[in-house]
Image (cartoon, rainbow, N blue to C red; front, side, top):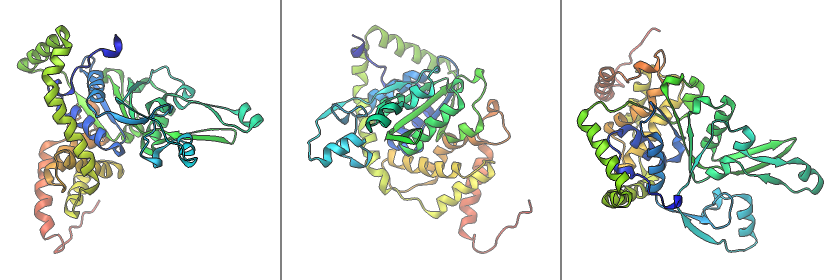
Length: 359
């Protein structure tokens, strides 16, 4: 029965626009390397993740492959599937939903990356690999609740795989590599401390969720929840058109993304924002560029505008601001407006005079 348990529809989630946007952007562009969701208990974090997986189009997989390789994409295949192809075998196909793999906080590194049987390798010259969580998560969503309780080293490993799309296990000079392309979603409850800034910075996007304080919205949440619990099938049915519309939008956005253009003027704007907002390192700029481009694709266009930059600022910068505890973590709206207004004016006659700032 549990297989058929209906998932609450993504489109029916009330409010939480930033979180939904961050999840959708990651679904369209895996190069954003994940999203970190900070929110109190009961802010529908896991609901949203499961709903996203149910929303996303089914994927084509190689039927009996551990990693669920894409039969049409040699570049991301595991060694075994490549060997089959090289031998001229036809890969058997299946279609299935994207998986959500939960990473338990108690997970050891072996459990995450998988284990390599060294004795076997030395004795028989064959690599016997016992797949871990990263293998299961390939082409799916890896959901880590309370990511702050994980060992820092393991978080690093997750972020490495999310960025590279592969997992490499090495033991005593023997190494094994397999595809690990997944959408990383880390969540945590802000009452439980913070994640180290070095780790935070490596999550592409970040969103800070607060409980809903508007009575009308709270009523809407309760109404929808009750309707869903009373009749999951019927409730999901009512949202199916909306879900299908979103699904088509995602598919279209994925196809559009490679052709999206960004002008130097917009790159300038992004750099100014990062400087003014006091952000460390260049990752913020890169992520803002990727997020803005993905935003454009989601909106069905091909050219980044100021609006796209503005709508990706929070997601890309929230966790990269210096000098501020998370509590007051809001992007300074007024400052942002100033930067955006200033850049667009000054860019036109920028070549006329250079401003010198003494630091």
